[in-house]
Image (cartoon, rainbow, N blue to C red; front, side, top):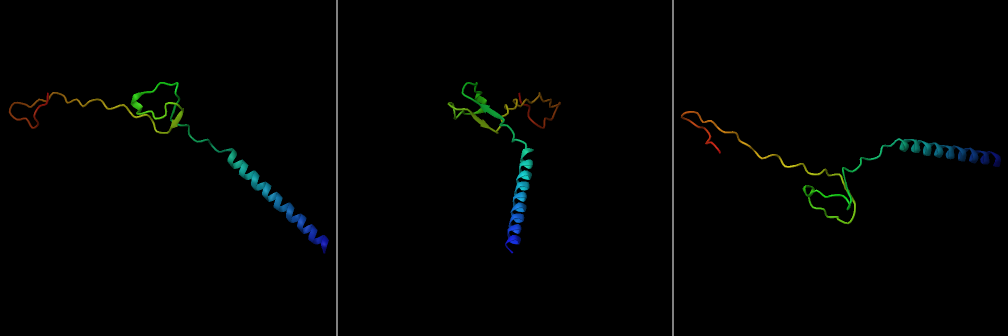
Length: 96
């Protein structure tokens, strides 16, 4: 009886350890192909120039990263071409 119980414990231990080993290998293989996250869009350090259009720099003494892109430049000013009213009727008064 003791031999059967001992053999059963050995077989159970072998199956358990092999199952754990296979699970560990499967997890390692799955994470080995993972892609790194995207790099930050803006990386600034104190020795680099600062563009005032980016806004206020709160951390002048340390490097920092951000995923927010720098703001776009403002649009060009609106230009309205000269308006020809015709001879007698002008629906919109001309702007000069």
